[in-house]
Length: 211
Image (cartoon, rainbow, N blue to C red; front, side):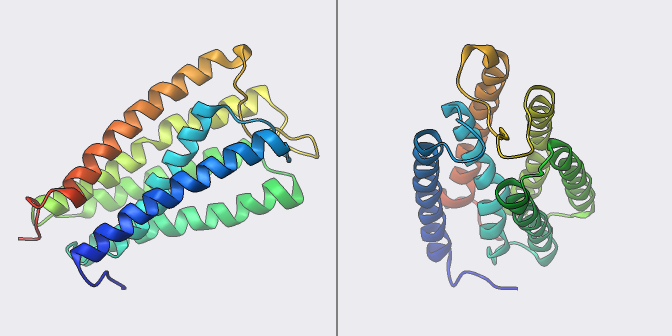
């Protein structure tokens, strides 16, 4: 299993990844709303949730797999999450932009699978120190955030046509969807607060060491 050469390298990779996610989210927002490709307009708060989800379920698992301070079981648990999300990205990406036959039920089923897998993996872990306890808790929190994601997928299933050339994949920022946008805003605030806390303890503070 690959590892970063040092904690400094891990820290640099983390800040670089944060910058790349922010840049990609900004570009996607303007492209989706200005060029209007398949999928429709995306509300700003929905973009924030999308960026947070990419960070939580894609970027951070990749970085945690490379954190040599964590034991092999923890790193394999995050590798499992990363593999699940990469498979989802490949399959759903094809459905969304090539075959145009995506259904939110696929996302709901995948969310349920991820929750079961992450909870099972977290239950088997026996952390050796504060850093590993933090990582195991992060695994459980990663599972918990699939719950609002499932609600958002159900909302898409209930309110939009998600197949064909005129498919809608994103909630637009208009008054008819104010309830789900408010729920999304709450989820974004909770996720942002959690990620700030986690990153501060995991990367910035030097008090948590693998001892």
